Image 1 (cartoon, protein in one colour):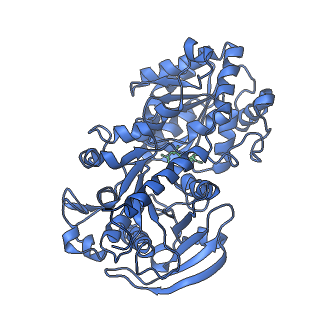
Image 2 (cartoon, rainbow, N blue to C red):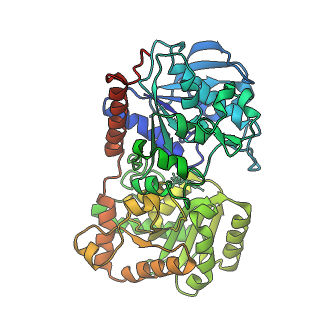
Image 3 (spheres, helix red, strand yellow):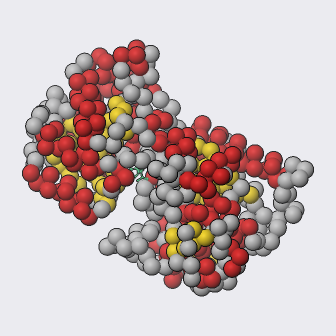
Length: 492
Ligand code: ADP
């Protein structure tokens, strides 16, 4: 299996996809799947690579692609890696998708078109390698053209799986990019890469892939509705027999409060009282009053409408009227960042806001907070609520996507049967969020019940083992389909 991805944590990451790309192939290998990765050779990632070996020196493709090289490489803790070396595309400072000012790279169609194009080459009869994947597993729109290129590639060719981590990111470009991407004119149709008069990488992936998956069962249903399908809902309904939802896991070695080197004090379920040393350290770090009784709320998130941080901002004045502290870590939309900076300025003794990306502080907030807040408008899976449960920090979440699938609301019944792990609200409003936070604050007054809630979350298995098994089953189903009589056999 070839995992095709634009992100790979910690070297190239803008969100959860980076974490998934690093951890899933490793879990698949542990379950017996020969999983390998294909990623662009971004400078930061390249610098960490060991044992590079050239595999193909002069890859030329139709369209406006610069020549590229393919190398094999190793990175600690990941699956074997193929990297695409193409300096005009990847050799620049800045983020995976954007420059330092938050502007999309103007040549993203070529940067990720090349990723998709090389993936299809490796899955076709023209591969320069002596290894061919049974399945090309494409992650999000940057890999979305791979199934399209595969469709036009020389057989035998790999089957394809398109995984949607966020349907809101669709890789939409003007129609003229079709020839720049070396796609044939007939691909530009509603039965192809065309999407409302433009070209969409994600649409292409959904249309051409043999199977489609997304990262939670609830989100798999939601993206088939006009509300959350972001315009892809019709096509997704059409393809629903081939669409499934598989929850993400988390890297339980990186995210483990018992061994986490970034914490002031490590702890586990048997030594939960040690957790509070992390709270005291964070309170001190942000100049808050340092004591246990005052509830500390934590947020680690992209600061964008999707994550509902505007809803939380709305209710800060009301929250701050009570003895509550709030620590927010995140970066995103400049306007919303400004709102949060102003709140931190106004409520200096109770609200601390760190604008930026800080992996170490993310771990600290997960461990130090009493309650984690994640009021997303939509959330394909979400990782932070999983981290927070593992760190004994019950989350307050909205009932959407993966949040609905992973957090069990705390009430008398779920406390009694040991399933309660957090607090769930429904309406995307400040009032509903406030109601759930109030319930969490009240629940914290019953220390035995609170401890039970923490332990329920800490004991849940969020490892990649079960999800990797589900993916492996999907790959095997695809392979079986290909080899069945009447199936499109690789020898086509
Ligand atoms: P998304 O991918 O939509 O941003 P997820 O919850 O799936 O949301 O994944 C977010 C990932 O990014 C988590 O690993 C989280 O810890 C991390 N993260 C988000 N914002 C920050 C930040 N400002 N600093 C450090 N880590 C962050």
